[in-house]
Image (cartoon, rainbow, N blue to C red; front, top):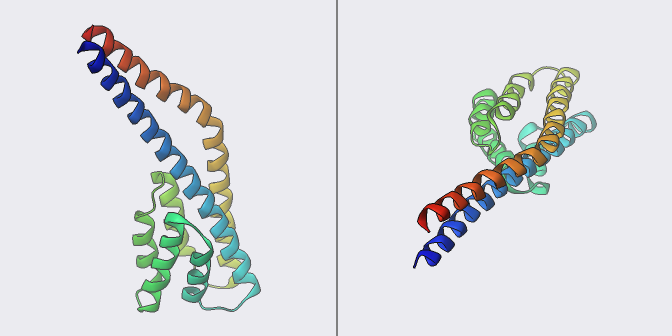
Length: 164
């Protein structure tokens, strides 16, 4: 019975570790999709004179996951006539990323009015910051994985030892 309990504890901690790893990967993928969407937005603004809702909808169709839903939701809100800044801010709050990434993308909503040069400059600044954040995440991943593994399996080992 103790061995079965120990096995369940080990499986539980393993599941917690896998969940954290999955969350980390999801945030990294969302950040990567955001960077690609911002780069595409900047280049499309330069090359076309397309209205922003239509542009966001088209970009949402070629993105995946949370970023696709974010872009599509923004387009739908703007098509209903809602103000850009409040819509952008509200949509950014739903992105499954770290708070500093969410704030950076939300601040971009204030830079999306004005002339083409100002808009593209704001997007490029935000994209540059997001790229640095992605590089930082890549550097930290190895340490984070090691720490998460150590915490989960050390805790499981401790409980198993106490149980036996």
